[in-house]
Every structure is written in structure tokens, then in C-alpha cells.
Image (tube, rainbow, N blue to C red; front, side, top):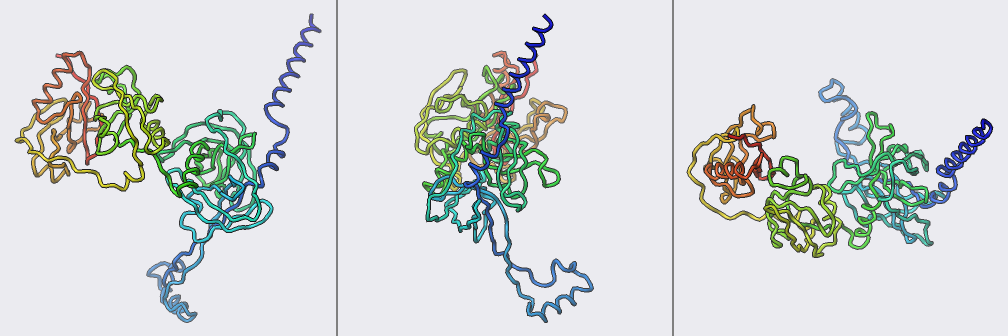
Amino acid sequence: MRLIGLTVLTMIFVLAQVALAQARPESLAPLAEKISPAVVNITTTTLVEGRTGPQGIVPDGSPFEDFFKEFQDRNGDKGKDRPRRSSALGSGFVISEDGYVVTNNHVIEGADEIQIEFFDGEEMKAEVVGTDPNTDIALLKVKADKPLAFVPFGDSDTARVGDWVMAMGNPLGQGFSVTVGIVSARNRALSGTYDDYIQTDAAINRGNSGGPLFNLDGEVIGVNTAILSPNGGSIGIGFSMASNVVSKVTAQLREYGETRRGWLGVRIQDVTDDVAEAINLAKAEGALITDVPEGPAMEAGLLSGDVIISFDGKDVKDTRGLVKQVGNTTVGKAVRVVVFREGATKTLLVTLGRREEAERAVPAAMDGGDAPEPSKTELLGLTLTPPTDEMRKELSIPDGMEGLVVMNVDESSEAFEKGLRAGDLITEAGQQKVTSSADLEERIAAAKEAGRKSLLLLIRRAGEPRFVALGLTTD
């Protein structure tokens, strides 16, 4: 029996070793050799205006300032600016045999000349096809007299935390270099609207920007873009823009020379637990519409206070998800938008506009109207009054916008804890317009009668709307 037990343990150990060997190849050299010809080093040159006088040599006001200025004059500077050339390094990769190259926008931004160096040492000049600062992606083109080696995009959505990855590029200007690590996390957001970063512990340093992050099949699943570091060097926290974002951006840049993202035309915020309770929504999910300016959403009938729970057949979890869904949808497409409104769902058909055009447009002005006579009221820890002409001017409230101006907030109140401050304008309560304190009192009473624990308020500050749910005390 003892011998049988040892035999079984030995077999288990051998099988485990075989499985481990299958999970991690003995060497990544074959993969590196396969993909290296498609990875490039990028050198950019920018003409920088020179500076007059001895700046940078001695401090302003130094007793040696006149001496150095006289020295420069004798050597022909004569106090004039003298332009100089500044160089920067980065990485990139070829995505087609006819010479399209992907890199980061920040690598080539403002460059006068872009030089591409291939793995075999050949150099070519590149031209910018298009850029997208929102995702920090740029598409370049080189003219080659032969088909170039290139690498395909992989499906970044299939990358799992723990999968092996390889980064390749030009770290710190040292030339072609390979680092290996794993996918540390997925769906990271840094600061951009369309962020979808893969986090990796594969070493990424300055100069790696724009280089590819490969899976073990030799497919690009990310573009190395940023690192988190207290000292400027790799500490094992690097970020690569997901290939499913990059492939869409580069396809648009290649076709149009610019991006063309879908635009719904709403301002939105996340649904919190207390907001969900206030509007009787089962789950704190979706995107709550705070404002509907002139555009596709207004034409389709979407309203402030609607919660978008589905877009084009896909559930909406939060505002970040909706922004990405809309942006990735074709301009001009008619999509079905499901909203939660007044306790029920409603489906609307919206024809998307183009975000880039909307961002260049001037927001439409609101209709005019007379303001009610001012009178102060204290409710929910707030001192409120209808806006006077002077308040409208001071707080930049449009003439036609009605509501209650917050004059003061009790610092011990829930309203203060949730960020309400003097100068805020309450335009809705319980998803109905408020023009007087009587309106607000009526909404409070109706919410209590309906058994609601909180009341949803629409607040505007400097023109920007957001919803806040305030708790109601029971009598």
C-alpha cells in the first residue's frame, strides 16, 4: 500500500510538471524572433525656439549676467533667439504590409520629423496619417519598396488576469528590448473618457511608449502607454491601451484621417443606492440623465431624470460603460435606448450624431421666462429662495431657468455631507420642476406619502447638472 501511494504521488508530481511546462514555454525566443521585424524604434525631431540672453547659464539678477550677455554678443548671438532641435524617442509597430505604423500620440505630437528604425537597422521617414489624443493613439505611414513584416491585433477582451504577455520597444533609448510579465488587471481607467487599459508587470520604461504588448500567440493586445512610478522607472505597474480600442481608432484614422465617434447628446451621472431608492429603481445601475441639450437624444424624446438601462441591446452598468458604448457605435446608426422613467421602462429609437462635431458646436440657449418674487424658506437643511435678477447675473443662471437658489447649507445636515453648497440651483424635485418653495414642500409631502425614504433633487452648479438624493425624516 505504501509503495502504491508513493507511485501515485510520483505520477501526480510528473503530471503537474508537464502541465506547468505546457502553461509556460521553456523559452520565449521563438516568439521574440517572430514578432521583432514588425516592431520599430521611433525618433522624433522638433524645432524649439531658442532663448535670448544667458538664461539657463546664470540666474536672473546674478552679478555675472552682464558678463555672460557680453560674451554671447561677442560670439555672434547679439541677443537674438537661436532655434535648436530637440529629439525624443519612442516605439511603435507595423500593422500592414503597406507601411501603416501605430504608436502613441504623445510620442509624435508636435514633431517636425519622424524617423522609423526597423529591427534590421533600416531607417525610413514617416508621415502622420491621423491622431486621437483621447486614447493617445497615432497612425503613421512609411513608403517602402517591398512588403513589410507586420503583426495583427488580437482580442483584448479574451486576455485574462494571469496570462503571460511580452512587451517590446526602445526603453530609455537602448534599442530593441523585450520584457515579459503577466496581465495584472483589466479595464483600468486613468484619466481619459475612453480609457480601457490592461495593467501589466512587464517592465515598461520611457521609450517603450507606443510599443506593442503581445500575447503568446504573437498578437497585439495592447499599446504600451503609461506607467505608475514614483521615480520615473518601472516598478511593475504599466498600462497598455486595449487592442479592441486601438483597432477601432486606427481603422477610422486610416479611412478618414480622424476619429468619428457616436454622440447621444446627454449629460449623465452614475446611479447611487440612494438615488435608486428615490426613484424606485431595483438596482443602482445605469446612467442617470441630468440634462438633454439640443441633439439626437432630445429629438428622440429622452428626458432629464431618465435612467438609461440599455443601449443598442446591451445593458448599461454605469456612465463610463455608456460613454464607451456610444463612442464605439457608428455615427448615424439608429439604436434602441431603453430608459427607466416614472416607474416603468420605455424604449426610444435614437439616431446618433457625431461627437467631434458636437464638441465644436455652441450649446443652445434656453427659453426665457420671468422669475418669481424672492422669499426665503428652510427645508432639508437648506435655506432657499427663487433667483433674483442679481443672483442670475452673479451665478450665471439663464433667464429662462427656474428653480430655488441655495442661500445657505446647515453644516450638520445630510445636504452638506452630499456636497450641496450656497449658490447651487435646485431645478427639480422628485423628477418634477420646482419653481417655488411650495413646489418643493409638495414634492416632499408626496414622497413621504408614497413611502419614499429619500427625495431626488436635480442640482445645477455653474450650469453643470447632477442629481442628489436627500433623506426624508418621518413625522
